[in-house]
Image (cartoon, rainbow, N blue to C red; front, top):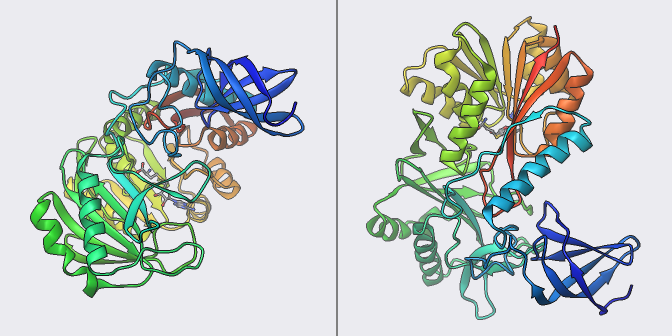
Length: 451
Ligand code: SAH
């Protein structure tokens, strides 16, 4: 096979990154923006030893699973990998991604419950972080990165976000231009405005505007306050986050409130919760409630249990289970999130929940050494999963049940496989789609101690 050759193919499968897969002369060829069942004329653009990449030249017969993407930026933007696929098909693919992770990577065979789909494929996010740059005429733009690149595609209105977000980003960019606030330049670590980070409480409608800057410019940003608060009464909090590092981590450690509250409020699983800019908060609130609902069901609490909530963020999961537990102890590494969690407990009159700030593995080791023996452990780690120290401490504490909540099926499967080498067995997995249109999928896993 050689570059620039043209083939007629039928797409057989789709990868988790949204690339169609077909076979040509024994070679696997990946073709982006295609759907299983598509009959296509493709052009080969790159040939490696075992596989190759192609692009669509012509759609001969479109797959029944294909639909016209509703977003004009779909082809360039790296955000939505499944935007051109019917939602039922996308859900089927995501269920398969979860199943494959546990069966193939983890060599586990739990029961798989049907994936919980999302009612809306658009405007379901409550948070966006837009990188800022200058275009070739020096005008400020913001948007999202192109596929596999750090080139910013200016996106006027991303269909995953509230409509209001695009009007707010526009007002900020025009203000920054007027005040000659420069866009950050990644390669040289120069310029000022790095990201515009917005959050909107799903039920409260309260909005936070966070300007991520390379160095503090509180005075220059002062004039933005009346611009935003007069035009957008939803804005309750305007903050500046300072990130001086040459890094692709978005937020720095220092946040300064420029106007209004330090945090916004929202309702999650019936609790009123306060969320600081540095605190993690699930981006799709109604689906997060279903995810936490599944976790609560798996935890099967009877009112007496000691519950340990590892990686608890602002406490959302533990607090949603507190009414059914004897006590809740949350562990989280970000101090602002722990503060939120404590205040969230108090605000909702929850008296049986406590929170500790620290590394999940270290704290879990300490709790195990102190003979703190929880009946149920919930663990909701970041994408990289739990570390071995944490898995070890969990096993030492020997809870009856472990409920693993994860945004990455591969690391969840790896961690569950480690637990299965010890005294646990995997019972069931509930996939939940919090991120329609994108390649991401969440799941909840129930692990049970062997008798
Ligand atoms: N359970 C929460 C947060 C889940 S996201 C919710 O549903 O909202 C994962 C959380 O783990 C984040 O809050 C992150 O700050 C935290 N975290 C990451 N590494 C950690 C570590 N080593 N120890 C403790 N918490 C950690």
